[in-house]
Length: 370
Image 1 (cartoon, helix red, strand yellow):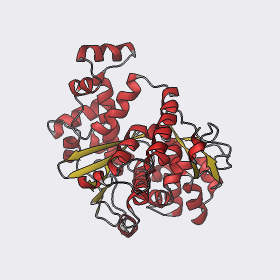
Image 2 (image 1 turned 90 degrees about the vertical axis):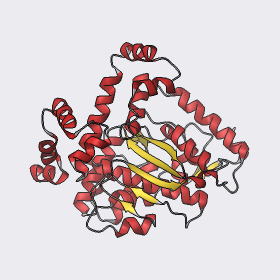
Image 3 (image 1 turned 30 degrees about the vertical axis):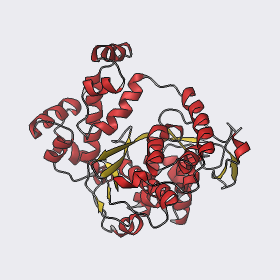
């Protein structure tokens, strides 16, 4: 039993000690859901801002009992809608950041415990990449090393959903808190990349991240020195890590997920890194391209269909949440030229990118709603 090595963490709606050996205390969310402990700070922040919490929860289409302690999970996209509505009503453009600032290592439950007892920071970030699904099945994390730079990116399964940019900044702020718990409270990244237009006041971002913050980016990411990955984590216990890994493995084995689901998750992080090539993905799965394609056909889809879907979702996100030039978006999505991107986007949506952007900017939607 995990409790034999004292694996109790602080977390949950009441901040009380939870025995992480209990399945009642720790369960993995279904596809498209996130564990409420990860986003519990939404309630705290909205109460502090004087928002109509019950009204916003209802308007977002969430269960009115969301924060009464009876629920463990919530739909990821509906929470994004809640954050977006709350940001508008409270006039707080950095609401996602405020929520992420309040989220701790303990909020991640067993996953947080695993990160705490990894041997090095690199091991912890790779564990976050591999096992985020036991806490959050609405997004994926990816760690890539380029020479002396490491990039930890965060990609939503539905990046075009309402509140996506705020969800991304919430998640990056949470990762910063995780890294400060492992590396010290003064730790800071080299840069922070956010896929949203810059708010009028950017000081809350620089004040929290203690690093340059780049808005209008194609992805949400933290840029880190690669040498950080070798840093040892003080007090890490290998015995605890092994026991937690075993328990997390049990949760993951119980999760149902098709090849299509896994490919969708991969493509959300790969689509802006020019890695959406069927040969590359087939090699990752250690099968040949023909076998890979046959498996997808059996599930009623194809690599091209899923790749186009991922490109379309990211394109809608960048058009709505940033002011990035269409030519830049076409490069980010690996199109040969802007005309090719425009042609593809028109085929997907029935509209030119510029027209779709005009109709779907957040301020346009708010005006239409009024």
